[in-house]
Length: 150
Image (cartoon, rainbow, N blue to C red):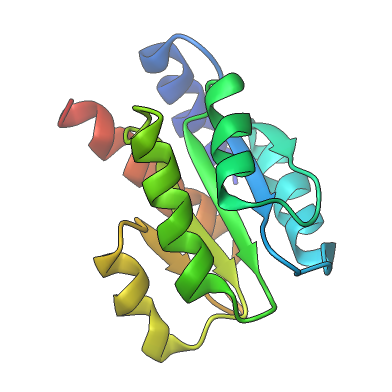
């Protein structure tokens, strides 16, 4: 935990602000307990976290992400809409010139769907039972990689 907090502080210096993440609940998925846990945990580590409203469209989530200049959108999926909604979110961000925003998906996502999501622009998938600290480490790694390759 302490190492993640330190790494996030270093990343904040590199990007000029605290890294910001939008937690998005898209489609008809009204279960937000897991999303709230992730939002709280990432906030504790040092991310600025914006919890989007329930039942957003991919376009609405993209608008919110761009308006708030986020670095990462974490799409939470429990209602099996991930194969449709995540690619639409990626495309909506591209249409707004925000393809630099990292899209990750977490929740109840069958392992056989991971590659499909990765092939459609999702940077990482975190399925059931993912350790929150490992997820935060992976997101920080993605952000640092994006900075190195910018």
